[in-house]
Image (cartoon, rainbow, N blue to C red; front, top):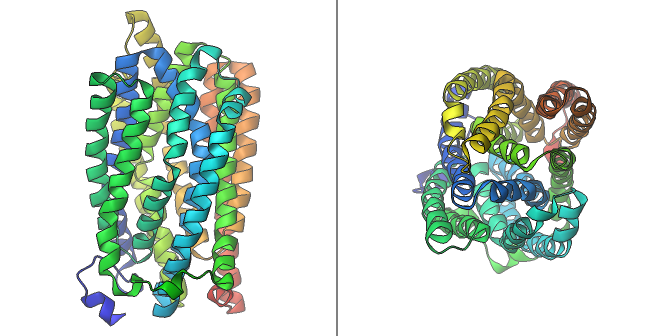
Length: 462
């Protein structure tokens, strides 16, 4: 890998150096990138809510989970690719790295087209399945159809960013996300406020911004010699495809289960008033802000653990997981305090309407936000243990944790909503985190112990 180190790239081998420094330095650019990503997600909601009103904001919320059904599958695929490529990079296997990247491109193209077709076919049925109020369906359907048309673009970005992260480069995805965020906000204002494209304008703004982020990642990929593929690398290789699918399928299902639980909750939310739906949507968007560092720590741990597994450095894996758990907990506490102080002010920027509508919507959203803030460390630890277990090559047990998350979310939402009303829906989210975390802690301990005790290298199966 010495040749790679001399190239003008940001790749990073994480098998040497102080674990906590490596993990935090890798995660920090991703956190900044997530801030910008959440900024344009929040911008969508703010522009829609302020310009088009409470009903449009509610329609945006009604389309969120149906949209994530397919995005979760695309993200699961890119996660499997990232783990496989990180294993090859940690081993110093240049041939497998190049061949794996080429095959991943082919696999991503096929999956993207399949997801696009299925999404466009099932969009109306998914909204109906969720019991979406009739007055919200036309706008929600417009948003979904445009979003599904952009699946190939989003898949391309996920693949390129996942490949760079697998090689330890978190700076390039940061730079591309910053640029995309600025573009998205500008296009939101242009399309929705000035051109009057309605909720569809917000969807187009997101797709164009994602396209720009993919384009901005491409030069970094092209500069890495080991990723300069030949025609032979694009020929499907069954052993590699099988290994990626074995890793990706449980993560696709895991994401699907999380989305399925969210869809059940959304179906319950849809039985309440439009004001409550709008407030829940605003609170859910702030949920994304709370998660700013979760996926950053998650990506860092997947790459760190996978590279060190490839190098056989189990001592470094243990040290890295311990250090990142403390760092993630501290980060969660800081974010929670900041959001509790500033949350109500931020939420007031999501809605327009009468003073009563605004007050009622913000009250709903802030109650949701406060409950999540208090329990935020649970979510951060969930990401640490899930990503570490996945980095070890075990994506099955994290999928099992998604079943626990689904059961806790659905049962809590259905029961607590009946017993204590609206607040029960907020508590359901925290209950889902706790159920998944318990399973994931045991999953990590089981997986690392099995590898160490047997002396087996998971990479021999890849």
